[in-house]
Amino acid sequence: MKGQNKLFIAIIIALILGVGIGGVVHVQYPESAEPFSKNIKLLGTIFIRLVQMIIAPLVFTTLVVGIAKMSDIKMIGRVGTKAMLWFISASLMSLFIGLMLVNWLEPGHVTKLPIQDAASAEELLKSSKGFSLEDFVKHVIPKSLFEAFATNEVLQIVVFSIMFGVALANLGEEYSKPVVKLFDIVAHAILKMVGYIMWFAPFGVLGAIAAVVATNGFEIFKVYAVYLRDFFFALAVLWLVLLLAGYLILGNRLFELLRRIKAPLLIAFSTTSSEAVFPKLVEELEAFGCNSRVVSFILPLGYSFNLDGSMMYMTFASIFIAQIYGIEMTLGQQITMLLVLMLTSKGIAGVPRASLVIIVATCSMFGIPPEGIALILPIDHFCDMGRSMTNVLGNALATSAVSKWEGQLEDPVVKA
Image (cartoon, rainbow, N blue to C red; front, side):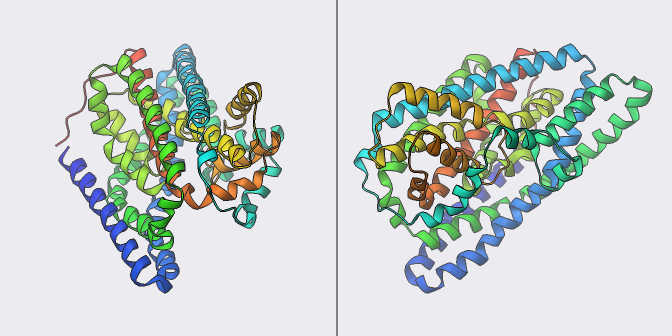
């Protein structure tokens, strides 16, 4: 635990330094803010790319080994069913909380935001226009495993890995054992790399935070104070519900889980990337006592189907934009929107700014000006910090819960 605490402290220090350095540049050297941000952001870019480099092989090897070692197809089906039950319930709950609180708090009615040039949302508008069932299917089913690896399409890798793992499990031990052993060794080697890469996390946090503060300063918090306040209040409610569900299943061990994942939560919050903590999360959940086979099966699925923070944000932001434009939506329309978001949001994990793309598509569908996305783009970075952190918590709870339901949650591994 000592190493974990040192990393956590280093990240906290980097976070404070990032805000301080960014603030000094914004106030004292405003003319240098843009080039400074561009250059220091490279620290965050390096960290994210180091993590992205190992995600595809880690997901592939751990998932194949996990399924192949299960050998029992009934167990695979049972674990998968329990996982999907959690994912669907958590997604509906997240969407509903966002919908309920945005209607109650009405941030779009009390906040007077400057109408921004829609040009800043042009890229997202283009991305959303082609969204269709055909695109969804193409995004889920890999045309080539190598293409999926090259583009880090986690869901496509998951689909191939599940099929390959099931095939290995039914091939017979004579043929499957050496392949499974090889992949198991590769997975452990990659997890060893995680330890090295995570020590670069404080630099990544420093770069990401300093860049955004240097560019936007502290004024952005004042302009969007109401929106940020209401959104983070809604996130707090979602956390309360998730933690309550976690406590009902895990009991007092929930607090040990939170201690284990505090560094991944902080990294996700600081870098706005839940993907950046995937390898570290695998390591910490196994150390917590979750069955390694369950972790390697559930966690990759969770990254595609269980993004609780992103789900809540979709209903919250969509209704907020409608409020800004004075568009009143009936309860029936809002419930329909919730169900549409439930379906269209699945399987787009890994798409850059996926939540925003889906929000634009949904706004167009319900007669809300999609250009309204430009209103929230300036503070989306800060909202994304909360979304990413919540996504990590949701997936950690889902994996732990399924391990407990399977009777395979062991005593935690004590680290030196």
